[in-house]
Image (cartoon, rainbow, N blue to C red; front, side, top):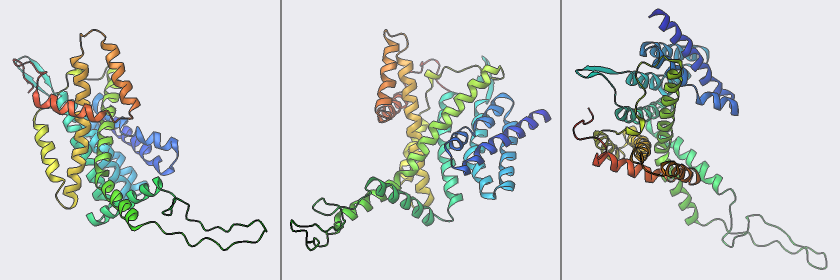
Length: 340
């Protein structure tokens, strides 16, 4: 056990180093930051969840002492503890009359979404002293994005808002054009409304992306550990992944939370975004599952992934609806062997 803890501490320091290089703000630093959870997940799946917990504690403490306390807390809330928790759930098992039963992948997918939303709201609380400050940060970010999309202010007749003088044929300068009209109040109001709407959905997009990343991290680390021969549980049938119907209740509760004030509303929006990613992944799994044994399956899968790539993820909306229907109807599970 002591050896496992030592390995965990080493993995935590490596993960903290990968997270800390983000301060360099270079493309390579961003790439290294994106793989920061992998060492903790690998040590958690290959050795034990206690080793992953030691890694989380060691990395957080190192960043807090070397850089700043906030960096340590941010690392713990956004990287270390989510990685430890997912490794812990993955290796959960219970003895049954038919043998050892491992934690179902459907429930694991649901917890991945919830973990992403919790990690986002933890960072939000840590970065802002109150909800008003956090809301101001989101609105400022949204206004910046809207201004980037509309860099030049235009007059009502379509000309750029820059006065100029023109020379006539005799070479004398004419009087400059009258001062151009500023942008109309309606345009300004529209930009403000767009920025406010964008600020409200930013938590959903952030949690959605984090849920997809956490799922990828868990899959990649499990593959690495399996190749090394240290993965305790057998490799699951991923196309058979199906979340329980209780996730629909969680999603409905999250929608209601969106209308609550303060950080509760932000958490609700983040939950909706995270579970949207989870249901999209379940829709993807259902497509793989239902296409098994069908002629031309390879071509069907290639076409689906091509559509996802060409539409830049817009087709994920259709997969999300497919995943929701798959969970609600529960048609894939055999009736004589329901999911636990």
